Image (tube, rainbow over all chains, first blue to last red; front, side, top):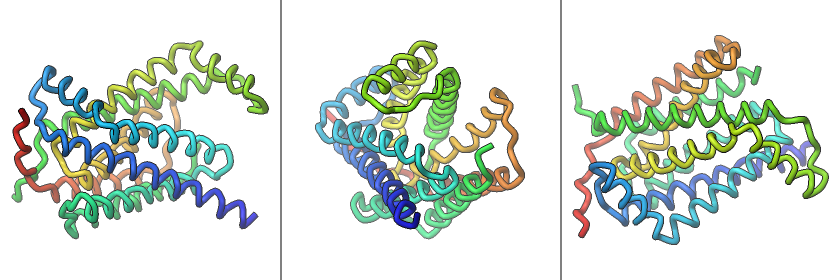
Length: 129
Length: 140
């Protein structure tokens, strides 16, 4: 039983890692395109430029992988555990934003992110019905 | 009052995309409610499940909504830090809660309302922490 729990928890962490790669990749693409969307026309041009980057497609692929992993996890895991552990991606993304994208993640931002994670865990623990 | 670096435009895009996302989740739930419980013993079972999921039309609408959410997400990422945008997506918990009450007539416990309130507080603080973004380089 304990082995199963570890397996499920590991898979959930893996989906969080996938989510992090997905959003990190998209943000790198968006930064590389580096244009401001001012209206529908520039919006379309912006999206097309992003979609021309291979990294964007890797991100989308990883997003699908994450979705399938997540659906697989949901067939086995207790929902409250799954959703609690899934909030881990907020931590990973904050760390990745700071370490890789060199964003300035202030103590205030960490505090807000922590509150959100606590809130998600409460929502998850409150049950599914 | 410290000026937040998030423009009203970003907030509107995010709120709009979270509402679309909540609608997508609602469509997925509706299409799942119409399904017979199946076991996925074979590829044929999986294919039958996919076929019957699309039959109600809700799944198609859900996927179209998700595509729109993706485009809006790119627009948000072009305007704010990832470490700001990501926590803000948790607003979906708030919208999904209201949508569940309004359309699916689900009951929300006090514990869950407490969690939703914490998320709301966290989102507010993260929003305040956003700096005005550097001017993006003008592209040719």
